[in-house]
Image (tube, rainbow, N blue to C red; front, side, top):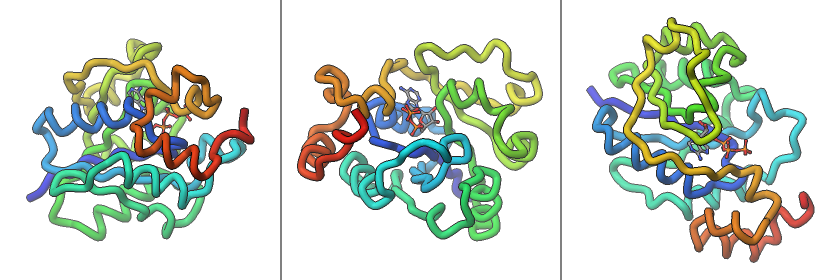
Length: 193
Ligand code: ATP
């Protein structure tokens, strides 16, 4: 019986905060593997201009050395849009009925979980694993959600894709070097500044 962590996001672009979060989720030893699920069309970001899925996927592949423990997945691209997390969880549970899934998120996502599509069914379907994120505070989160939450030991990192999209000199350092090169080579984000 394998225990799989699911870490979804728009990763536009992937940054060191994501990488450190993945390390902390794995170090917790609660899960055997983590799958990084690239979301083509997050329900809460449908109006936002997004970098092409292919570019975001390529950057994830560069950032994460795939191993027995880490997989980068494009499964949500084949599911109906927008990419509701509940839909993905139900799809994966049906496809891999013998495995247990955990939903891995940052604290900001925990804080806003009550706005997610059928969040109560999400917490019925799987346990949450959460890493701290600077600027977030989970003190107002419903007890029914917190009962299904494991807080993972983690050194918080103040970094976001939003800041990196502005291509400020300091924030680009929060992206792995091979991803920085990919961004420059493909001239990504310059039109968003
Ligand atoms: P944006 O700034 O575009 O909203 P983001 O930096 O929050 O992006 P996402 O791809 O939306 O990144 O996040 C994917 C997942 O990673 C979410 O669960 C989010 O909470 C988590 N996450 C992102 N950055 C951090 C961070 N610095 N610390 C902890 N968790 C993070």
